[in-house]
Amino acid sequence: MSESRILIESESAAIGMAQLAENVGLDNNGVLMPLLAVGTPLPAEAMQVMSTGSDEQSTIAIDLYRGNRMMAKDGTFLGRFAAAGFELAPAGIPQIGFCITVEGTSLWLSVTDERAGLPLRVEREFR
Image 1 (spheres, rainbow, N blue to C red):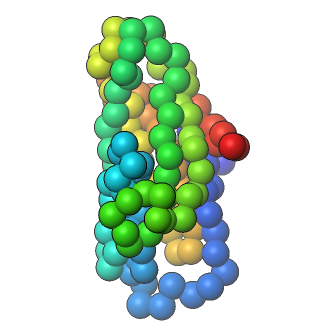
Image 2 (cartoon, one colour; image 1 turned 180 degrees about the vertical axis):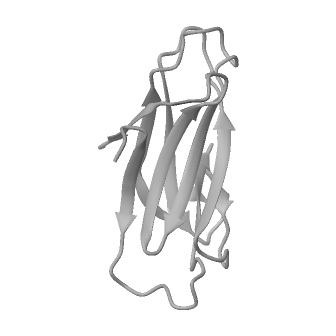
């Protein structure tokens, strides 16, 4: 496994009809922003490009959830993830692609520097 891809969750339970039973998405100021919607056929992949909010920021972090409610706090917290290794630049310049992939019963996160086309190091942070 490369440093740019991390296994988030692997469940032994059968998925059933090979589709997502819950939304999978990012916390966007408390609201669950689904990247993969309930009912999406599997395997599936979705990407969200984000950027930095301040000048010379060295990492970008996301909180990942799964659930069918509008508020992130009502879903299941999968983890906080940070990407590093992109070039320091003014706010809004770095283009960091967070890609969620569901393969069978496994959920993966990979991160790329969209401007350079290179994979980035992603680490799971524990609260």
